Every structure is written in C-alpha cells, then in structure tokens.
Length: 480
Image (cartoon, rainbow, N blue to C red; front, top):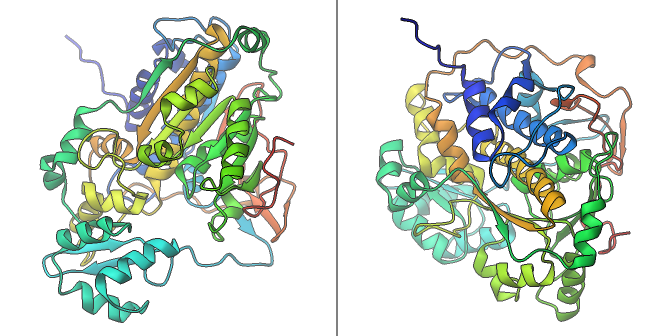
C-alpha cells in the first residue's frame, strides 16, 4: 500500500486559497512555481507569498479562460493554454518593497513613538503613524511624544489594560499574546470558526441596461481589465496591494483618501498605476461626489469599519441600492464576527495579538517581540483581495449580479500559522541582480526609480502599469 505524499507548503497554501475562492481544483495543474530560497521567518512566509500571488494570477487566468460557469457560484475553467508562473524569490521581495529609488531616499516608515514597549506584565505594541492614533495613545499615557517618556509610562500598566484603554480612546495597540492565548481568546475563537474568506452573490442584479452592457464585456488578453473602474477606499498596505495588482491588469483605479491622510514612505510603492484623489466624506458635497463615483464603479475595495460606512449612509444595503452590480470587496483587521469585529488594526498589531511575534521571540531566542521580516499578512491579504475581485468580476460578467467578498488580516494570520512554525533556517534568497528589475526606470515625481519585475506571469496576459506612482491627493476625484 502506498501513501500520497503531502504537497509542499506553497502548494498547500495555494490549494487552500483556490478552494476558498471556489475554483476548480483541476486549474491548479496550470500553476508552476519557480525560484528558490525563502525569507528568514519562523513561519513559511515565502510559501504564503508565492501562493497568494499565484492565486491572484490564477483568478486572472480564469477570467480570461473559457467555461467560466463551473461548479458552484464562483466556478471557473481554464483553457489548456492558460499557464500561471509564480516566482518564490520575486514574490518574497515584493512583500517588502518593490521600488528602489535612484538618487533619492524614502522617509522613515515608522513614527518615532511607534513600536514595542515592555509593560508591567508583558509586551505591547503602539501603532502611532497616524496623528490621531498617536494623540490617543499619548492622551491615555499622559506623556509627550518622546519615546523615553512613553516607555516609562507604559511600564506602569498591564499590557492588556493599556491595550483596552488605547483602543477605547480611538487609538491602535496590541498586547503580545502567544498562540495558545489567542486560540482561547474570544476573538481568536471567532477567527478560527470563520471561513478564510467569503464570496457571495448580492442583490437582484444590475439594471437591464447595465446588465446587458456588462454581459457584452469581454476581457482583452493584452489588458484584461481595461474599462473596469475600481474605487479604492483603502490605506496602508493590504487594500493598496490589491488595487495595485488590479491596476497592473489594466483597471482604472481611483484611490480616495481624506484631506489629512499621508503615507510618505508607502506612496511611491503602493500608488503605482493609480490616480489618487481626496474627499472629505463628512462634507455633504464630497460625499455626493463619492456616491456618484461609487454608482459608476465596477469594483469597490474598502477597509473601513462597518459602522464607519453606515454612519455615512453607505452600509452594505445602501451600496447595493446605489450600484446593484457592484463587486464589493471588504477588508478588516480582526475578522467579521466576535467581540473585536471592526476593531482598528494593522499587520504589526495582528502579529502581536495572534502569537506570531511571540513565536519569533521564543523560537529565535530573542529578548523582545520578533515579527515576520515583512508585513506578510498585509501583502498576502492584498493578493487574496485581488483574487476575490477578479472572481467577482467573472461572476458578474456571466450573471449580471454583484458580489460581496470579505476577509481579514487575522484570517490570513491563521492560514500562515497553520503552515507550522520552525526556526526559519531555509536557504536564503539570492541577492538582487539587474535581471530582477524592469528594464526601463520609472519616472516618479520623487525622482527616478527601478521597480522589480512582477512576481507572477499569466501566459498571454502581461502585467503592466500605465501610470507611475504619484502622491496622495494629486488627481481630481473623477474617472478622468
């Protein structure tokens, strides 16, 4: 009697993702992984990286292929010519920073106060990059924005008590828990009980005229998402990663930020292929502009907490009434059920909450929280969101009906941790070479830069970006 060998971690991750996306298992045979080595992490980050970019590539290939009506709501077929090639090494590096400035420097990623602090009974991370989040943490601690003063104040608190107080004040913080504590926590249990992602048909379909127009739409292999309008209501990394991928497929991406939001260290990398505008959604005129944009969009990707959108009159039912055929892709940090559903959060905070930073500290023998070498939860979730949007477009093209998709950073953390923890001693990635980069430099407003080649290729459908990266708020709030 022979036993079937378990597939390697990268293949297992892809199988899990493709199953969650409702894909035909036979399509997995069209995926090839190339490259060697891995990031030095206690969890299989490189395997997750290459699997998530492959899932996005496979969803793109499915959109291009024939026989999109398959088994189940989101079934999709691939023709024999469709092939997806995902590079382990390039995927790993894209999970860090894909841009290399030439003759200029990026500003620091982190605010001077942000980071890990030792409390009276353990570690806590304060996320203070946004001014209002920093103000909330400093108000709770009653200290100025000086790291030494913050450290002294934190030392007098219990980590979980300070986490609770900062979150209640409108800030962002996470006490460090180990995996067992997270598994026993009510939110950890909620994440474990929920699916990795959900994709559900929504509403009664678009109007007859809109449905007929969408039914006539067929993707062009050269630019498969040409003519598709994507409204990007996300910030920092996961959502922008998704919309950057969709822009590379030819989508017309319009990113909307509030008037006072800046991401100086991230914008050169994350705004590639997009137009970036500003709207104050608390202003009646700007909200009316946003509603017009939303009514004309094909895809909405957003990371707003549900109560925040509802307070603007844009809850799920209102969005559906405004645009019945919308592919509505939703992201949050800690999941959509449980006591922390809708809690503010970021990749680095989720790593603290769910046990990843603790595992890094213990397994590597460090004396402080040791997160992953890249913000892998953000980037992997971004490619998952892109795959969800592509699956939703395929379904809408075939039925005229919209789709609502949901996932979270905590769900991606669970997927990664299910891959098993170790000491992170995989062979290292090879150094970068000129062959890793696009041959033509990118001319950004900050200066020239080199950008890595895409980490995934779909036969006959090259990823390419029509616009260089641009500052937030540099475009008008219209579809151009």
